[in-house]
Amino acid sequence: MTVPVPLLTQSPYQHYVYSYPHKTSYRPLPVKSVHDVWSKEDQNSLFLYIHIPFCEMRCGFCNLFTTVTQDNDFINNYIKAVQRQAHRVQESLDNPTFARFALGGGTPTQLPTKALAQILEIAATTMGAPLQTIPVSVEVSPDTATPEKLDLLFDYGTDRISIGVQSFIDSEVLATQRRQTAEVVKDVLCRIREIEFPTLNIDLIYGLPGQTIDSWLQSIHTALQFQPEELYLYPLYVRPLTGLGMTNQAWDDHRLDCYRAGRDLLLDQGYEQVSMRMFRKIDVTSRSGPVYCCQVDGMIGLGCGARSYTQALHYSYDYAVNAKEIKHILARYIDSTDQDFDIVNYGFELNREEQQRRFILLSLLSQEGLDMGGYCDRFHTDALTDFPKLQHFLTLKLLQQHHHHLHLTELGLERSDAIGPSLFSDNINTLMNTYKIK
Image (tube, rainbow, N blue to C red; front, side, top):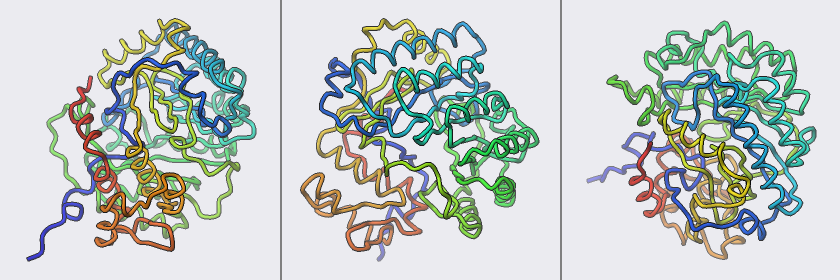
């Protein structure tokens, strides 16, 4: 009798692993200074990230740390707080070199143009990031990507624009409690292409209410009209406290069929698959930068919703989804003293085992695969010995081995959101399961 294998029989949509450990495993920490946290880290190739927690609307699927606001005083006070934090952090570092910069949220282009310029100036002047020569990515939305703001981003050296479209079918977008029309989106995409940003990324979501495989492929075909260098295909996750999560709707789960149809279409159209979600046009050249992983090489996060990563520590501010709780956390951030920005007191310290798991997860779930030689150089042990589950994945044909690398197979790629969580430690699972979301 054949025993069913959970990884092959359960839903492949268990948990989106974009970092390890997940932010819901963060807890209060013994107080440390930012200077001490970074004093023994290599600061020659850091990722700088600034978080803007403002949007024009709250999408029904969104569980990000963001708020809907039009209060200019509140926005200005937030910018001032980011500026103060940047000064304190820069003073705590030892002549850092930034290899990449990203501005995310929320929706950075929700900021007034003057405020957006102030944030870019914080990155360029206060932090010293050479925006004209390093990869710079900014997230935008259709309703806020005005010509003036796009020109500003281009002038500051932005070479990658990422726009959350989700769907080109108006009824599907409306079902997610999002207000936008396909015609507005197309106009903005034309504008982005006219400015000639080197890289355009379009985000689409499959599994939306009322969506069919045909309508899903229609959205991808429409996106392809704008020849994006990158496309991210996200499966819908309905999470607690989100707009969709608080409805009584029953979800018709045909996400895997949508994924396969979308994947096959993009591969046929000259894209390569970088991960379960990311597809990149083959032979596209982008601004050069080192092969980079922000959670291994180090990331400095500024802003209330940002996280920072060292080799052995992830730290941030508190996290919430509920609008009232987000406002409270933002108010505390804005009211922080300069000395408050000098300390770290919330996050997660990674011991040796958690660092090993992070190394495996962040490489295995992407195109580069797990370099077992690199793992051995880092930890002086063998990955297959340390984690026998990897051998199990090979037996199930979720992984394939080529020389000293392990790569996801086609079957493994489509089950990335099940493979990743299966590698979480018991401690991380306990912390995530006992986290009380606000």
